[in-house]
Amino acid sequence: MKVKSGFMLREIAGQAVVVPLGERVVEFNGIITLSESGAFLWNKMEEEVSENELVEHITGEYDIDPETARKDIQEFIDSMRFRDLID
Image 1 (tube, one colour):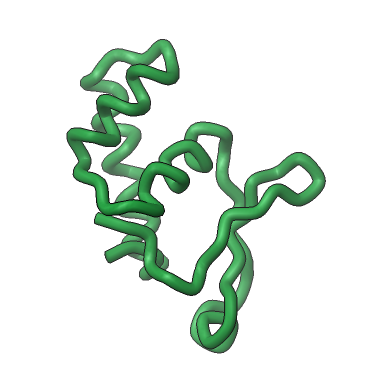
Image 2 (tube, one colour):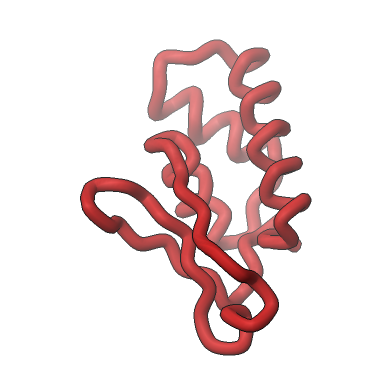
């Protein structure tokens, strides 16, 4: 999976925010704020990555067990799919 083109992660007032660019502005009304770990996952998903790779990345970066990481990542992915932000 990968973040769709036309979206960019920016830091605004210390908060990670996803903003639409170009034609996506018309399709997507609003912005999304991400937690620190959400921004970490977003950055990894700017390139094609599997769920297993995301689990490896997040467990390497944060003190979290793989089972909890997989559950949290699945929730993040579901949220991004619901908003049509990833392929």
